[in-house]
View 1 (cartoon, rainbow, N blue to C red):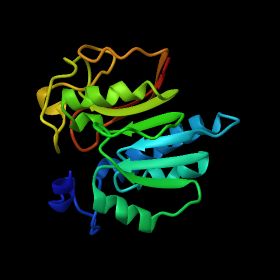
View 2: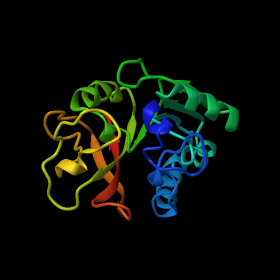
View 3: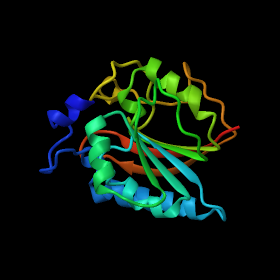
View 4: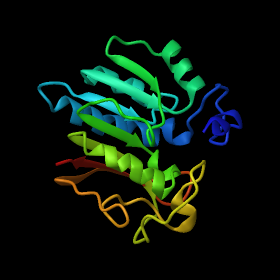
Length: 205
């Protein structure tokens, strides 16, 4: 992922780190922030949220105020260093971690916004095995519109399964994630490529 930022494979906004149009275009970002803010504010006791793959934090910075603690994680060390220097709140922590191989911090809710779509099935599975430690998981994925064959394997990196007319479905084989409840929070047509961007809330057992 360091190369993705160094080579500006997700675009360039004259910043050292840019997590792509999906993290900056108001058509994607504004409705996402709205639905997550509504969810977080529905709890009398604010949640501890783990943002797994926080990127340049353009989205996460709008959510921190609605949580008891916001733990933002990314694998790129220089990005986390920059985020620590740029975003400072009493209830905000940044950690450089590999969410596929490292132990995750404890929390009430994990959010993964267009993160798993870049990872191989093996890495996705290792992350899924840790999600059962949370009460809630909010997952955002870019998938083909209409029916598609889920979970075709890819090599981890910049690309996603859309090029294979596939997308992630954690409840389908080979993952078969067991959840107590599934609720679609948001569906936004991609304005810059094919497919739709879907945000789903899972209530875990």
